[in-house]
Image 1: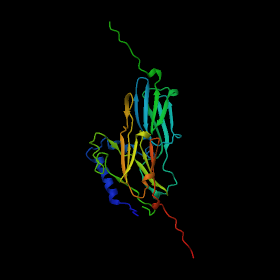
Image 2: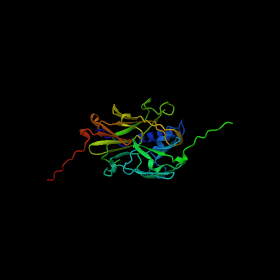
Image 3: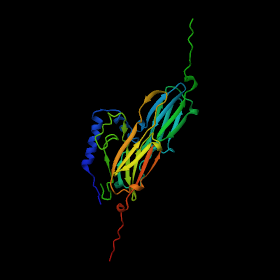
Image 4: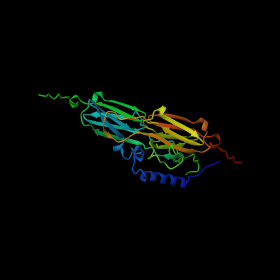
Length: 156
Length: 137
């Protein structure tokens, strides 16, 4: 039976490749950027988690948060004026696993809260949030006063 | 590492284009992210949990060939309208692990939920722990 033991050379090689990749040819390239950020620990840096993309059109804001594996029951989105608060919890490994049975533990876990200021007020009654495949998508309609008005220029 | 633990996986370096070689992904047109994983075992199986946000269940490709477990995921994500702030982009995911013959490769199953992929690799009969009774007499 081939019970391999912990191979220190293999692990060191892996670490070297990892460091090469970070410092190597691409520098801090787009290849290393997302991995280093998505494994960011929500427990330790709960105010910078999850990562967020924001976009807008004339009447709405679109906020997308990268947060795989959240417990949907703990996920909480609230809006006050132009403030958006997202909080929730990513569950750790089940507690009944003995530590000697864990080979790798790279996925972060913990509770987080993140708040954002939007550039205009939103209709808090009509905010929609949808959590699909680990991405939380929030659509926030702007208050009417913040929608751009088209002004016709008269030529005389 | 404790004595009960059989090392059932080791990681393979590489990208889909150059398997097993130093990754040249920064130069390739397609860019891959190595997803963070948890790997643990219980008495019957080895369980691999990977974070693959943005990948639906049809976008996951799991293969076992020559004792190598390959996880691939195609993320579908585009930001709408006018971008105000961008902290993440989603690309495709790719990671490989070397399995030992202690996994029963015909009974591997996988499940995807909320962007988290869980792969269950049942242990082969011969590598399950056997209880041996000690006779006193």
